[in-house]
Image (cartoon, rainbow, N blue to C red; front, side, top):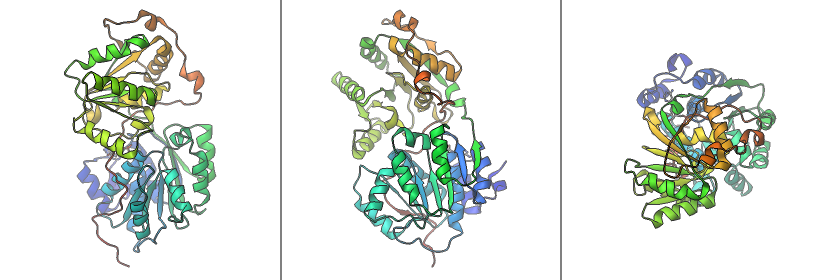
Length: 422
Ligand code: AMP
């Protein structure tokens, strides 16, 4: 299957060629024809499956056929994403794919000043990518009206619900015109996602893709059994090895991320922490320092790490195991990008043993156990809590990788295709 067989227009085909995309991914192949016909869509797809292009290409194709400027403060397309990173990443992709199409786009999210965002909105945008909080805020201040929206996309609906955005999302949906094209994407399907989707999708086409297992297969995975109190020492021993160059470490809480980062800096291992309590500026700075190699270690929590797209991460270390096994796949997928091999170490204490069982069940393989001076047999033999009992119905695994990243700044861009003619 070729992109041209999907009836994609030349200005988009040209970019796809430049980007080196040879064939559509399964989600693109299945979703694009229906979306070009204007149908609603429920897509079950993780990050890394090419879902962003699956919805952006038809949207851009729709915009390419319109020959008028958008009205001030009234976007034509609204894409809602749960995190700033993801929103920025979608906006970046819109810029890339829409390089040869005249259209305006901007991204808005909290944690940064609203003035440039308001200015962009006033100029008129075709595509608005937004996180729910800032969108509602600007709607209440009358900087945004949704009555001219023609296409609405809710991305990562499951994450949106996990993050407590349901009331905000419902409120936003209540302002969107009824008979427009609507799309909902979610990594996993649950009753809650389904009932939310039902409130705005109209006779949707259902598309579900299984994530590519290659990400996991390419990664050398190792587990170190250890008691909680020895995690720091074991980590420091690991970090003394020079071939560990660019290391992303995951902790379960913000507090633990801060504490660990401080400890590492205290012994001369340059590190930074990112998590939800940091300002957008701090997060951007931390990511850029890590990307450039100014700090060797980035300590992150799961939510902060979503959408991070840093090149060349050599190692992922799970200082704490995630209590949702899907997050394990998501975390380790940060290494081994673009076909490269990566290494993931996981520390497992006795109270995390059950999480490890769940992870091994999900990835359908036993993770290699590494012997080390602080090895804890007690942890290895323990039966810890199982996440499956606490998180019913979260089946399927979240494969793939982040993509995109921190490049968006909330500024409006007119793509290179030039101005519209009225
Ligand atoms: P996404 O799932 O949208 O985050 O996309 C994951 C990654 O796949 C991004 O880095 C895209 O640039 C890339 N990608 C999307 N579509 C294709 C394609 N058809 N062929 C190759 N790479 C793609």
